[in-house]
Amino acid sequence: MSSQLIDQASPALATKRPIDLGNVLFLTVTPIVALVGTALYVHYNGIRAVDLAIFAVMYLLSGLSITAGYHRYFSHKTYECSRPLQLFYLIFGAAAFENTVLHWSSDHRYHHQFVDQEEDPYNILKGGFYAHMGWILLKNPRPRSVRFQNIPDLLKNPLAVWQDKYYLPIAITAGFILPMLVGLAFGRPLAGLLWGGFLRVVLVQHMTFLINSAAHLYGSRPYSLDNTARDNAWLGVVTFGEGYHNFHHRFPADYRNGLRAHQFDATKWWLLAMRPLGLVSNLKRTPESLIVKARLDVELRTLSEKFAPREAAAPHAGAWTAMRERLETLKSSIEFSFARYHQARRDYKASRREASAASRRKLLAALETNRQEFRESLRKWSGAMSVLNRLPQPSAQLVTLTAFVDLLKQSGL
Ligand SMILES: [Zn+2]
Ligand SMILES: [Zn+2]
Image (tube, rainbow, N blue to C red):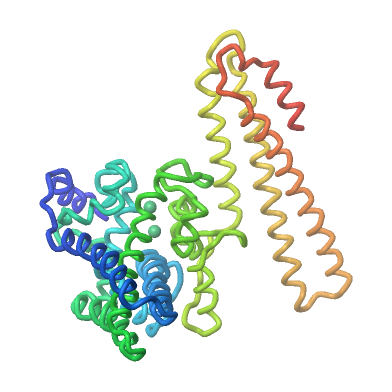
């Protein structure tokens, strides 16, 4: 985005914004209908399995259309998506009543570009409620012509433009009429409307809102300390995997948010399931070496913030600098050994096709050696980190050169 465009938008961002009456009405009436209406309906008609099934299917379809569609495809282009699946995302994304994909993605790209700043549409520094839903209750400060300058690719997508043009009829048909018709097929149209329409809309919306609020307030920051985004396992479970938000802000082009097998990322699993069907392709992954480097950088910076301010004090000035130099050396050796290990893994995998048994054995031995070297350097690093992290916030007297020398011995550096 050019600075001229930011200049055009900034004065409006800073001024007092009028209330968006349509959004205020929707965001207050739907929860009342969802809670009171569903409770009354259950009181008089009970709950049947079909009601819960309509709710669950609609929740899944509209929730995944937001996370896999609006977010990881349209906003970040983390993979290539077939037209039929794009159409599916646009229809059921509209059913979540979170605005058109053009608006959603534009806002979200500004969020990443200006995170924690005035230009961030859901800036957490303006408070948890503002980031959660307060920002939607006010009119968008960016004029439409300026706002959409950050989505030139989407403006060229005829399906996205079609959804923008017919958003309300699509949203009402897919979000309310469809679940009501399914309910009607089972003789319970009102149950379909309440469970699959109102209650589901409210829950999917707050699922998304939690990423803008809670995922910038609660959790850890293993990959970047440059912004407020946090990794949070329980948020991952309730948001189809979007809770690993610190990783996402650091590597937004990655189709995954939860990297590891134990991390709940249903959106990632959905995309992996769509791949063999030919509906998605070219799922982008961050090179593992960059992920390792990001983690080491954060750990080193955390320690630096803890020890560096005290180091100027006499009589042991320079103690942290000396320690830091050793840690920097170890960090480089981890990155180097990881690169060698990774290369050895690639060589061994490639050898499966044509190499002789003898050369494959050699490559396997090299792979094992490189794996051991990488693990050993990581073990030393973890040892040093756990010792240094256990130390309390130091006073000038505590951070002595002797203390550091002891630490070096303990951590095997
Ligand atoms: Zn965020
Ligand atoms: Zn994002």
